[in-house]
Length: 439
Image (cartoon, rainbow, N blue to C red):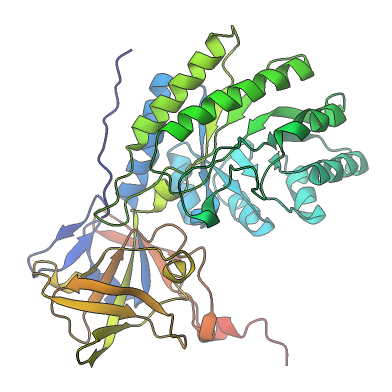
């Protein structure tokens, strides 16, 4: 079979990043100085071209090697109505994990059949909401299944479900973002799977579409995905035999890693997808079984390098013989990941893009915490008050994990394309901060 797609290298920067004659970065044809002047800082910026290219890194190879597929964006990485509308244009669905995420998805152009509802502790109200909108529910545990049985009977509504099972694969990633190992809080143990199936297989209000699995996030190896395809095919055979019919869908999750620093070496998305899909084809055809629809759930690898955050340098503090701090106008409320996961990022002075890195800095935020430091040691051009700092690869888990710590308004988010910018999220105001206060 001839592959018609192109393997694209993993980049840290958005694909449209350029440097203008003034030595300032531009994204999507819009100068960073223009963006900060118009929208202020901190500012989340999403590149339209990178988002679309990242979507196609999944859809193009799958169309070649496994046409019966659906790419479902993991909304927890970053979720706005505008973003989902763009992803819908690329043919993607979305998975959500809360009533708020589901409400956002319902307000977007994503078709309801392409919305999946996840979560290990869905409330009855959330399950009702999903049922009333005919949303596919990923059942995480037996207690949730019991709740669904009650709710479908009470409302006489039909549930379309997938059962999330633990593949018991331990991928090499941060302990906080492993999900497929035996002690994970997510998923049904394989020893309990058939018992759950037997509870509902003859229930006309609950239709089992297939199985779901996920092994974790920020994974740099291809082999776990090949193992996952093998294990989940075996589980699917057991499920088909128990139900007495072919399984319609198999969901292998997401988790392909991205490049945050120049030392990171993730695999090409297309390499992982092709290897996993081919293994799945082999597992089913060798058993004489019909291929189910393949669902994958990328999040970080769709939005990660499409996003950057812009800050303004507000102060410089040199501690002789120790370090020099650059103080920025954001920090842990708009990017908690360095403090939570010890995550590393790539930094630059966006207004001095052509200048050499000659000085070492620590980048500290403005919040009242000693730990509010984005990096302790980075080489940059000589910095001055008023410079614009750019942090790459902030499209995933920055906006979605942001907070109002110290009563800081959350930043705006804009998208850029063809020399124009468009607001996806307005900057919060001081009035927004007290909107729900009662006095």
